[in-house]
Image 1 (cartoon, rainbow, N blue to C red):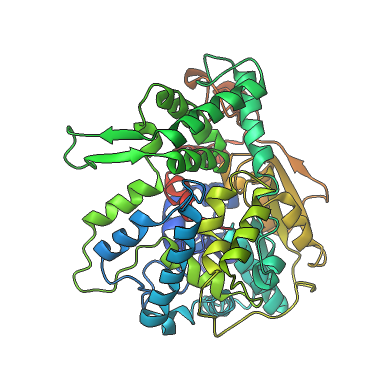
Image 2 (cartoon, rainbow, N blue to C red):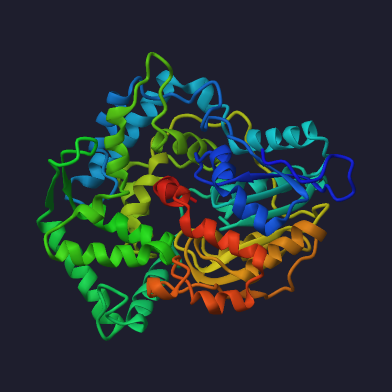
Length: 503
């Protein structure tokens, strides 16, 4: 917890705000530890900032331990097809390993897996708020945290304080949908905006520059297709602390592209450089920060006889699949049809399906505490929803769908590509969040906020986060918000955790 500058009882002390960074499976404790300066700069000194790990996540006990050891987890993930278009057998292998994951959980972690559902965590949040002396919850949740926040609001409408859900998922579909029919609605459009920004930036700023969007797209596609046919070897004999060898394949390249849409202001320039390196036969930039590198790190984990949690699919799947009221069990043929339908939304479904709803095809455990209510309600305080114009996995339409059920709520649209408002800094968005938390003021319906940042920008003329020039930024950004921009620019939390974010 980061305490307020004001003590309890002081009229300037406004209570506590709880935070959730999404996943499901990301640590709220780590989130607040890393982003405390960002939150503090935006919100102000009046609140205590509280991070907590939901059930089955982080340091909570009992641990949600599906694998007996780091070695066993590595064995599972090394063969798991994180892209089902890698080869002709990839989809079949994915389907089989999803069954294995479910069998392992049923035999080793059923009691814990039954207890980590979102409805139970929503109740936990009310208890945390009460333990802090509040009957009403103040909250900021991003990505999956929007589902947690919406669930809380639906379960406890009279206990809603100032509540923001950011990067909004469709909670109706989360609980009641048999398949994912909306997450990737804006993914391909988001990728196109990156190509357009590359063309506008010019060859000195964008490594894959061509003189039209179609040509940039073709260049990237050609590089991806080439490595699909002939993956690149990666060998390291100079750094004893790094992996010695690896293969950079189609899955890793597509993953890198997906990451660029998640965090385009920080990662699109790096992804462009990685594609050029790939064209030159060097896959090292692609490999850095990939899920494969995280799996390789399991080699260095030591369970010492303690419950081991890898924190990848073994954390997200029990929550994602256990929450569902509708049956997501699918035969191989049904699963294949679901995947093909998702491909109709985006070609990046090859990467999305096997790490999200696809893992539920054989999941055998349902949460004991299930939400089976409605999202049509009057909350004691109107909710603020935030969505990006081109969010790759939580489309702005989902925010509008959820807002329709919460009386008096408002959707603030951040006119940018990326996942959640934290993917790019906007003074306009920051000031709207500040006004809401400090005095309950909602932005006007239909408000659209521009970002202060560009995807491709000369480093010597920018804030370093793909930003506009420092002089231009300083002309309109309040001094106390510059710290927030700096934190977003320098933080690695979202980048480290991007591949574990599902919704």
